[in-house]
Image (tube, rainbow, N blue to C red; front, side, top):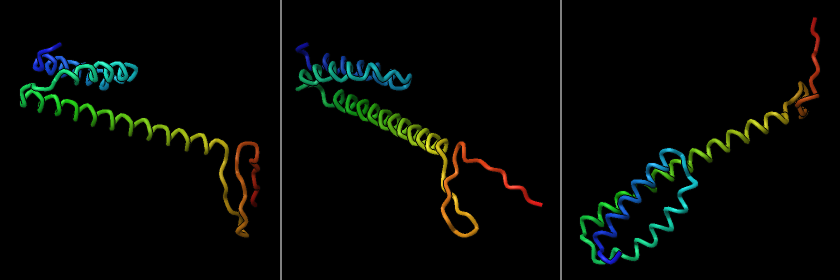
Amino acid sequence: MTNPDVAVSALIDLMRLEREAILAGDFSEIEGFATRKSALLESIAGAKPERLRYAKRAASENLQLLDAALKGVRSAQQRLNLILKAQSGFNSYDTRGRSRGIGPGSSTVEKRA
């Protein structure tokens, strides 16, 4: 592509596709989009400023979506780690202030009158 405005239009179209993939959670496509965007970026010198601003805004929006998706994945990972940690047990204190591990297989029932 030699016409910078055509390259910017192709870049904007590609970013729309990228946005749809992000919203659908299809992250396997992201690397391919990055490669194609890099190739198009080499051809946009001299494009109309308003088209470049639009492309910049679209890229910014996609970055925000990716950041939000990453935060969601990290949050889910932390929650899963907490669940896994809770399954292995936890520490508590007895009436004398001594630490005591409580976990699967260490359950005893105290009978009180």
